[in-house]
Image (cartoon, rainbow, N blue to C red; front, side, top):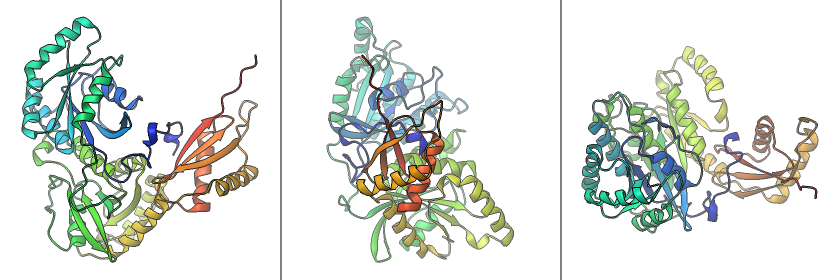
Amino acid sequence: MTEHADAPLGPEGSGPDGPGADGPTPVLAVVGRPNVGKSTLVNRIIGRREAVVQDIPGVTRDRISYDADWNGRSFTVVDTGGWDPDARGLAERIAAQAEIAVSLADAVLFVVDATVGITDADEAVVKILRKAGKPVVLAANKTDDLRTESEAYGLWNLGLGEPYPVSALHGRGSGDMLDAVLAALPETPPMPEGVEVGGPRRIALVGKPNVGKSSLLNKLAGEERSVVDNVAGTTVDPVDEMVELGGRTWRFVDTAGIRKRVKEASGHEYYASLRTSAAIERAEVCVLLVDAEQSISEQDVRILQTVRESGRALVIAFNKWDLVDEERRYYLEREVERDLVQVQWAPRINITARTGWHVDRLVPALDRALEGWETRVGTGALNTFLGRLVAEHPHPVRGGKQPKIMFATQPSTAPPTFVLFTSGKLDDGYERYIERRLREEFGFVGSPIILQQRVREKRKRS
C-alpha cells in the first residue's frame, strides 16, 4: 500500500519475520494524564514520528499500537491518549482509560511531568496501577536539564520506585528508561495456555458493536461461551476460544469490546478501538463482520483500515443474510464497489451467525487468506515479471525524468513485503498498478501487499 512506501525495514529483523513473529510480543502501555508528553515519548521509543503530537491535551485518538525494538528485543507500545473532554470528570476519565490499557499490557510506562510534580490526577492513576499489579516504570518527562532532574526525584513520593528522568523531546535519559522497560517486560511472549508457537491459527473476529461477533463465536464453539445481548458493547473482555473447524483446531478471539460503564463517556469508541487493535495485533487473520441489513458504515471502513495498516490477512463476512431482500442486495453491491474498493482482494462470504447458515464457508475463506498472506515469490521470477511489466507499461516521464525499477526482492511474508530498488521515486498511481499486476500474476488473495521503495542516491560529481 502507498502508505507503507517509504517505511524502513525495522532494525535487527523486527519486521514481520523478525522477533515475535510467531507469537504476540510483550505489550507496554504508556499511561499518564493529558499533555505530559506521552505521544512524544512513544515517538522517541519507536524511533519515528507516528503517534499524533500536538500541544492540546487528548489529541491521541486513532492508531494506538506500534512495534518497537530496543537492544534486539521487540515489543508493542500502546499509546493511551484519547481523553474525552466531554466525559464526566477528569478522575473518572483517567480511571477508565488507565484500567483498560493496563488490563491489556504486560508492563506499564507511567509518564509524569517533572516540571509540574505530583498532581491529584497522577495519584488517581497510581491507585489503578497498584490494583492491577502490573510492573510499572516511572518516567519523569520534560527533564531537559540538571535543575529539573533534581525536581524529578521528588516523584519517589508516588511510591512506584525510582523515577527515570527523561526528555521525550531531546532523547535525554531514554536509554536508561528503555533498559528498565525491558527488565519489566517478560522475556518471552506470553502465549495463551495450551498454545505452542506455530500452533493453531489465530483468528480475530472484528466489527462494530452488535454485528454478531459473539453469536458467531458461540455457533462455531457450539456453546454459549460469550455474553450475547441486543445491547451494543456487552462483551467486556476479549474471549479466546479453541474451535474445531474443518478437522483442524483454530484459536478465535472475540473482540466485541467495551465496558458498559465506559460507554457513558462520549469517547467510548476509543476504548473499543483500543481492544480491537490489541486483538488485531495478536491475530494472523481478521474476519470483519458486517451487518448486511444495514449500510456499510464509517466505523466498518475504519476497522478495515486498521486491519490493512496492521498487515493482517482479511476475510469479510456479511452477517444476518437471512434478513436481506432483493432490493437490499442491489444497494449492498453498490456500497461494496464504493466503500470496499481498497480491499477488493479480500474473500467475501454471506452468513447468518444466529442459525449457523453457511458458516462452513469460513474455513475455505480463511485458508485462501492465509495462503495469500504467506505467498513468497522467488527473486528471479519477481524480476522477470517486473521486467515484462515495465516493458509493457513504462513509468510516465515526469519533469524530463523517467524512474526505473532496477531490481526487486521480497524480504518477508505475512504480509508479503516487496522492496523495489529504483532510479527515482515512483508515482503512487504506478505503485498501485504494480500491486494490481502482482495480484493478477501471483494471487495474494486475502492479504495486503506492502511495497517499499529504495531510491538510488545520485553520485555527486567531484
